[in-house]
Each structure stands twice: as structure tokens, then as C-alpha cells.
Length: 428
Ligand code: PMP
Image 1 (spheres, rainbow, N blue to C red):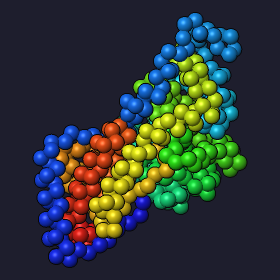
Image 2 (cartoon, rainbow, N blue to C red; image 1 turned 120 degrees about the vertical axis):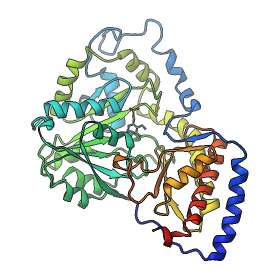
Image 3 (cartoon, rainbow, N blue to C red; image 1 turned 180 degrees about the vertical axis):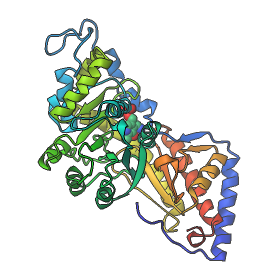
């Protein structure tokens, strides 16, 4: 996202718009709404799409493709059929995939802890030196919090419509403390940006001072399309290998927003050396994952077409919610040049960029209407947005009607905050 828009409002316009917006706010506040647009959670209807999975694998169905008993210990890397299915989803070979438990965030956490204590292939334990991570902004607050919890310094990198600004990433990666970079390459959280091929290629070949630098390639939204377009995942393993950095990418993903957010499967994928490293650590941590859940998923989704079909069900449920938000923003703010917002083609979020210095005020005004928003600043490292201008909207969980009402309220609050600031010239 680039600079905030700039508008100068005349006193007459301010007075007229202020009176209308103030009256509408009072009317809406009297309704006593209770709406939550804070987190990117699937709605109950989305979870219902996977209801058939709860009956699987079913009575006496526990024998895997390799003829093993899925009820028992073992199978650290995951069932071959699960690795094949989700390898196809991630665009990597089955042997490059490890199937874990239900949370990719937990897999990322383990990788950071193991990197700190043991080092990654080709490097010493990170904990022996100061460590920093590059954080494309706006980004995912839990990525930032994970690093912060271990004392890893967070360095913001701006995003544009092609993904992270690579020249800036390269300048910052000249510091040997920089060991990693968070990347959400498809429908980024929260901007919805999908990295361009050129950006991915440049990240694959990025010059870094640290030889053991890793791209933390979180493909959380790889198949979460909101239109009929279904871009394939970037071939990050192929590109890093071609650039001479075979071990650069740690890939993460899960089925949290495909099947069940609390009972899905999470994946690690990477080069041969990275998978061997991961399994070596994981083998001390567990005697094996829940393979019945892996069978359940493979029986239910079957193949890549099955995943796409299932995701079409999600799209039908959530695309109208995104449309409702965009429409509400457009009705109140379109043409006023007081804010701009993303029109994502996939993922879970809409990002709104408003007058500098007004995002916190918008959250406060929305709270006054009974609408809970993600705190202003959450999309920046340390929860601090120096411009106080970015908000993340998460429209998937509430019903379409509630989303529409909430979005109308939010648009109103953005308008009011802009008017309070007297238009953008005074707030910048
Ligand atoms: N990565 C990103 C970019 C996300 O947006 C989310 C969920 N909001 C996660 C990871 C968490 O995934 P999981 O449920 O697999 O831990």
C-alpha cells in the first residue's frame, strides 16, 4: 500500500457532511449492535462444508495405502497419500512434505525454536547472536508476535501491489542479523496481495549477509480464491534451487481454512536437507502425528480437484460478504478520496487505508457502535503503525446481513474520523 490519499475539505462541506454523519452515528449507536470483525475465522456454515469428514474414516477403515495401521504410533512424515494430496496443493513433490497436527502456527513456532537452539542446515544456533526478521507490512500479527516472544527484532519492509519491495528487503538483508523473512505469497494477510512472479524470483535469489537466511513462506491462503481465477502456487522450491539457494524456503500451510480450523492438518515443506532437519527435531518431540485425521482428510478431499471443489463452496459463502463490505465502503466513501481499500481476489481480509492519524479513532468510534475491530496497528511489527492509518477487516465469520451492517458502520466511522480531522491536509 502506498501513500494515503489527500483531500482538502472546505468548511461548508465539513459542516454538511458532519451533520449527516453525526446523526447517522447517533441512530446506529441506539441500535445496540454487537458485531465482531476482528479475526479471520471461518463461519459455522463454512465449517459445515466439512461435516461429512467427521464420519470418516469410519468403522474399521484405518488401513493406509502402505498397508499400515493408522491408529498406531509412527509415520512421522505423514501418510504417503496425504503428502501426495497436499504436495499437489502446495505445488511441491510428496517427498518434500511433512504432515503435522492441526496448526501451521505451531509448526512455525517449532521451526523458530529449533533454529534458535540448534541452527538450521548450514548454520550455527541463531540464539548465539542478535536475530532479526524482515516483516512485510501490513502483515500478520501472529507472525510478528511469535518473533517478538523470542526477542527476535522485527524490521518492517513495505509492500506494494507485487508483494514486498525487494530492493528494500535486499538493503536490509545486508545485515547479518537478518536470518528470516515472513512471506504470505498468495492473498497476503491482510492486503490480499499475491506476490508477482518477478518478486518471487527476486526473493529466491535475494542477496543476504546471513548464509543461513530463510524465507518463512506461509502459504496459508494458496487455494482460497474469491473469484473463478485459480493462480497456481509459486514454485518457490524450484526458484530457490535455480538461484543456488536450495535450502532457503521453509514452506508452511494448513487446512484450517479448508476443512476445520481447529481440527485440520498443518504442513511443513522444503528441500531434502530442510525436511531431514525438520524430521530430526520432530522425532524427538513426537512418536508420530494423528494419522486418522490424515486418512479422514484424504478420504474426504480425494485429490486436487476435490480441494478446488470444496473451496468453491467456501467462495460461495464468503464472496458475498466481501462484496457487502466493498459496497458499503463504496456507498459512503466512494469518490470522497478519504480512504482507499483493497479489493481482494482471495484470502480472508480487506485492508483499509485512511487518513494518517485516524485508525485508532475509527476503532474507538466503531466500538461506540458495538462493532469490534482488530486494534489499529496490529498489522505492523510491535503493533505500532507509525502512520496510524491502516485497518484490517475480517468479514468471513458474521452473517452477510451482519457484515453489511458492520461495514456500513465502519465506513461511517472512517468518514466521521476524517471529518473530525478536517480532511486529510490537517491530519497528514
Ligand atoms: N498464517 C496466516 C497468514 C494466517 O492468516 C493464519 C490464520 N489466521 C495462520 C497462519 C494460522 O494458521 P493455523 O490455523 O494453521 O495455525
